[in-house]
Image (cartoon, rainbow, N blue to C red; front, side):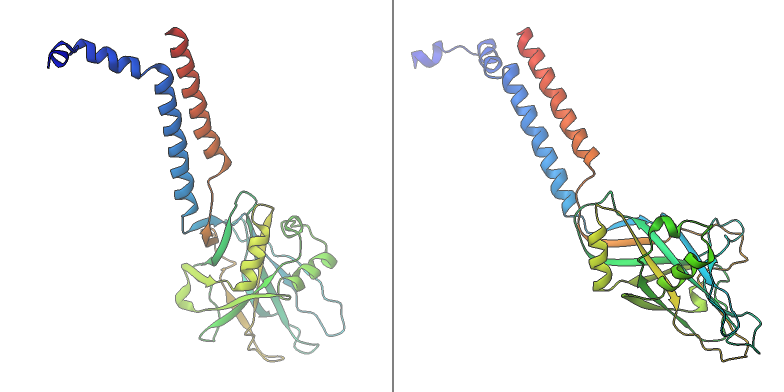
Length: 284
C-alpha cells in the first residue's frame, strides 16, 4: 500500500510515457504504418476487377473494286471530315458490273497500347462506337468478323502506305485467327457496340501485356449483293460525318498491379518519414 501511495503520478507518468515513446520508436511506428498502407494499396489494386483503356490508333484500309484479271490494290481510307480517322467496314458497288465483281470493300482496325500494364487478363470486351447514320444496308443486320493482325502498328498508322503494301494490310485485317464476330443493326447507331472477345484474343492480349501494342481487324462477313447488282453495306462509321466519335475501348478483368509511380510515391513518403525520425533522434 505504501509503495502504491508513494508511486509517482501525474507528471511522473507523463515522463515515463515520453521515455517510452522516443523519436526512434515513433519513427519505427511510422515506418510500419507506411509499409502497411503500401500493402493495403497493393492488395486492393491486385483485387481490382476491371480496367478500361482507349485505343491509340484506328482506321481502315480499302480494296477498290477492279475488273477481273487486274492486280488488287489498296490504300488507307481517307480520314472522315472532322473525325481524324475513318474506321468504317463496308462493301459498295464501284461501277464495274460488266467487267467483274464490283465490290469496293473496307476493313478496319483498332490498336491498343498494353505496354504500361501488368498482370493477367481473364476476360476482355471490345467496345466500338457506331457513328450517327453509320448503318447503311437493306439487310436487318450485318455481321463483322474480328481477326488477329500481324501487321506492325507503325505500318497501320502510316497513311502513305503504297498500294502493294496496303493491299497486304487489307488482306491481313480479314484473315488469320478469329477473335469473334458480332452483329450490327441500325439501332446501334450513336451507341457503343460491345463484343466479348474469345480465348484466342485473350491469349494474344496477355502476350502483349507489358510489352507492346495489340491490334484487331474487322471485316464484313455478310456481303449479300450479287454480281452486277447494287450493293451498299456500311457499318460503324458514317464517312460523310463531321462529328468526332468517342474512342474505341478495351475493357478487361483480371489481376492488376499499381503503376510503378504509385509504389515509388509511397516508398518516397516512407523515406521522408525516416529522415524526419533520424533528425528528431539527433536533436534528442
